[in-house]
Amino acid sequence: MKELERLLLIMKSLRDPENGCPWDKEQTIDSIKAFTLEEAYEVVDAIERKDVGGLRDELGDLLFHIVFYSEMADEDKHFNFHDVVKQLNEKLERRHPHVFSDHKVDNVEEVKALWEQIKQQERNDSGNKSRNLLDDIGKHMPATKRADKLQKRAATVGFDWTDSQDILNKIDEELSELRHALQEPNNIDNISEELGDLMFCCVNLARHYKIDSEISLRDTNEKFVSRFNYIEEALRKQKKSLTNATLEEMDVLWNEAKQEAKK
Image 1 (cartoon, helix red, strand yellow):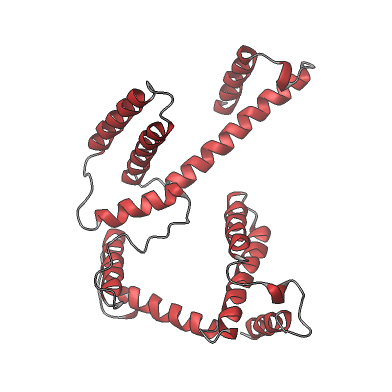
Image 2 (cartoon, rainbow, N blue to C red):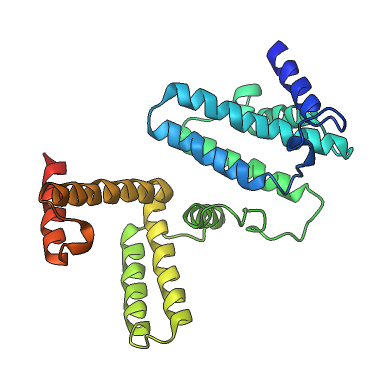
């Protein structure tokens, strides 16, 4: 707690109108949101690199942003950091009655179901009785992550497939519609819509198998980078470059990279 109080004091010093940091004291909640998103991705990057020391540093940077937002809110008489922590503590206790009260659950699935019930009750008690089921799912998260959350929320009221084959059939249907749209190459809006429908179904299939589609795609991105780097390095050994290599040459090296990965 001593170090946390020190952090809060440092933040107030940075925001001091007279003696604070010129950059920090001019920031607003809107101006630092992009930096916050960047810090969150750096946390994930450290985790994926298994860099424990880096993770500690990145978590500190992310905590600083939480304190930053809280200080700006406090200046405007909205809330302060202690209010944030107090509300979080109350929420965690309220959403874990199986830990903090005598409510019993037998497995993880029951925990998830209970969590959604409690969240739905919170939405009902929020004072906005007409709010729709999907309204509070953030619009600015990565598209695959939002698609997953939308589908999970709809599934809580039974709007979901129970069989993966049904999802595969839907993927086939959407792929057929995309092929049809591609017959009119100038109608980009229609192609984009059908492509989006297909990707949404792929996220649904991943969710059905409890695969995080965002992580799955991130892994594929890294696999692409690894294989493409192999091509570039192999061409360099041949005294060639990417710009003067043929597609056929690069394709051969791509397949070599796949075989090397299997080894």
